[in-house]
Length: 250
Length: 300
Image (tube, rainbow over all chains, first blue to last red; front, side, top):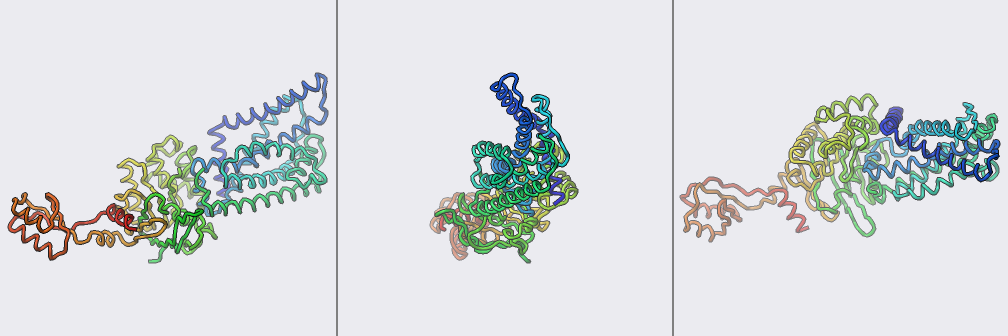
């Protein structure tokens, strides 16, 4: 399994090196979207407007969204692309089984996503004047969010496996993701995917608050539960795709 | 010899279409089985079930005794070139593809790299080892698809149209390689529409029609069975008119070489009629696989 991880990591780094414009394009687009929204909000609020700590909180939410987007979209886009280019069936011939392979692939692509978030953060902080703290422990709520993101990713991956053309759905559901990452992480909201981890990361990065262990535990439970749910759905989709001959074709 | 791949009673239905009905096959080491059929006969559906990509509605598949649907680990013993697929990543080079698929099929990273280099050299692709697949010719891509199936050195190979779209020279080279793989002990199932390829390579033949296997046997048996009681006769010189008339009366066809459709007794009468003209050749007519295929499919 370690070799599988290494080869997936190697493949994702090869893609980054061979097609750097894809990463650059993503950094520019994502930074521009936030910056234009920021300029628009400032224009509406007037020249003397101050956002206080809200700007940092919104930016953390946005960065988390960028980070989670990779986990959420990655599998579905990957499956669609593989179905289109005709490699999906070969991937399914792995003796590891498709779910372990895609889990390892997700993990290997994490580095690329982290690099993207870092570059977007480095672009947006000077542009907006936001000051973010990066306490090392913030990686823990980020990981909890990521677990949930992968869970949702496996759920939409199931749809991609069965229906292939899910681009529109992915595009629309990204906004739902934005809501989840900005929602409060308490009460009933804590039952929604991603929310407890995102709220904790926001506190730590925007307000400089310390890591709350119970909140982290809740975030991990939430992320784990949604990952489990996503995997169950994906396993069923694999079985259905194999039963109905949907692995082939686009 | 123990078969490496055994399928029993495979059945698959898509809606109202019964794509495969009770197909049973066995593949032994060192054997090439040509699996033939018209478009839509059920070949690819069967191959997909054999490779664990399509769940059968009935029947079973055993790959070295293991069920690939319950135990994906069994796929370690299988390599496949799937028709209609590109089989490899276009944005990776041949070397990268082989290393990736080698590890994805269960090899260690260093083993995959070593094996990839050996295969690329053996199949004449070493020069293109670092060229992205999308820049390779169709023939090279097809060869790479075969290498991708071979990288983990599986015992069983499923080759769905491996020579489709290749130029004559490359197709012949691929054929040679497939033959060599079988001689090396691999069990190979070959599906193709190119009857000459099947005839050149196969030890056994199975013809599928409307989801059922309608003919199966060794190539020799099948060709002999379909050759029937036909004889080909060639003379050193064209026969005079009166001899030709006698031949026609006995039912001999053709203008030289001549074809006699009849039994051995009748053949002696034809030879008597030819006496004393010098004979060049008398032989039992051989059926070719295309003829067999058309007859079987027509009458099935």
